[in-house]
Amino acid sequence: MAAVPRISPDDLKRRLDDAGSAPLVVDVRLKYPYEHSTVLLPGALRSAPGTIDVALLSRERDVIVYDSDPDELVAEKTAAELIAAGYRAFVLQGGIAAWMAAKLPTASKSAPQPLASAAKA
Image: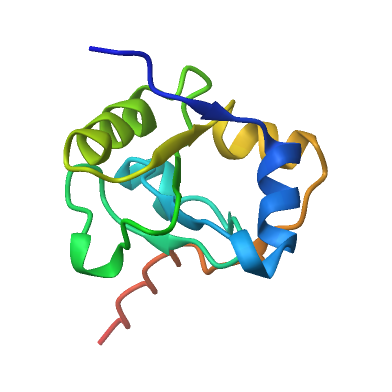
């Protein structure tokens, strides 16, 4: 498998700020890390690994995928599949952790809520 291209958090931030070349960002974190997080990248679409709806993608627009693994394993596999299908895909270096470490903006999302105790009869 050929190396999947990476993009740094700072480079992605610059691209997102340029409306003319803003890429589509896709969050492919595994279920547990995604559900137990309260943040995502601004404007990111959520897609479980291996289930990206290509109807939402454009071959005219770069696709940036990220996950929560510092080695970007899930994002790399997803990007490789997109590249094989003819899309311009990149992996966010360091995933969401690197984005947050760079103190770049995030969007909020809700985390799972604990189940309420069953009312005693």
